[in-house]
Length: 247
Image 1 (cartoon, rainbow, N blue to C red):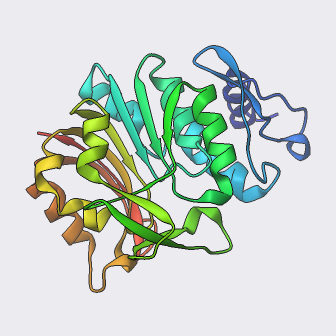
Image 2 (image 1 turned 30 degrees about the horizontal axis):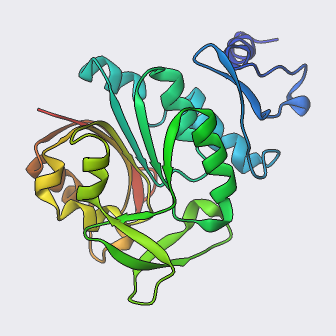
């Protein structure tokens, strides 16, 4: 076994994941999070795509939680907008055992999974989309739950919750805000007042959701909101990851 393989197994063991060979590697629904075993639920847990997402979020720390912890110090409030099945909740709870966490995910097809995981991890769950103002919204689904989009519609079946209300529910201040809502970030950016109460941000941005947008637009918006960008990964020409803190 290579050194890389040994390190990977040690990392897996810390989460309660055990396997003998690569062909046996699976993400179990019972995981060790913050030193305690938690019974979770996952859809398509045997799929390579799911294992990749788990590895990126929980092993590789693609949302740069270690960096945010280093820069922000004491973290009391965490908000996850676009929670999907709850993998960010797993990573955040493992990093901050005592923080209050609020999770938002509008997709009814995965409500049972994410609500179960939120409860198991001590997080508050809302089956809502987040946007600039309270509204009704329609969802558009794709082959993957990761790519569900939400659009304002007077006849929409989904609740759209104002970003301001999200901040208020978190006690008026968000220490760590994670956003991955397939373009919904652009409407939230318009509420500059609410952003004053956000200390740290980690998000997947989506240039394709606003025609003509560039990475420079993301940088300029965040700087205007008072953030210092710590890392920016351009994953493709149309989306990427950015982590920032208030200066």
